[in-house]
Length: 110
Image (cartoon, rainbow, N blue to C red; front, side):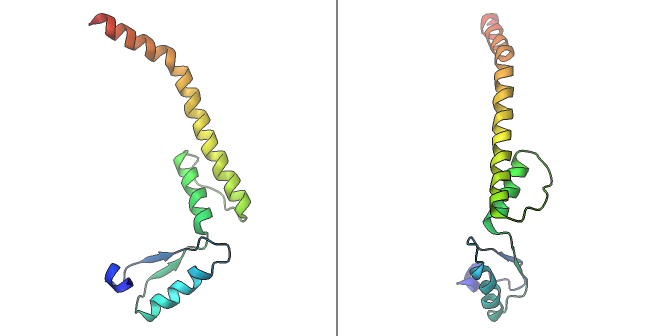
């Protein structure tokens, strides 16, 4: 299936494993090497790192320090998402009076 999906043998392929044992992400590059693929990378962090980094980028918290354990990554990601939601909720509450006034004056002017 790999040659049909990705015919370029020199294309970069990034593999990761969703489980904590990381068996699949260690086996996949070896199997791809037998098919003559040459540019493979193992993303060691897996889905937990992907969630953590995405949450930090989404909430604008910038570069993150390296978290070693899965619980610390999950806590950090949930905290970042909660902070972003709380910030947006606060801004919405603060903007309701001014935006309502603008809409009412716009409607009355027409």
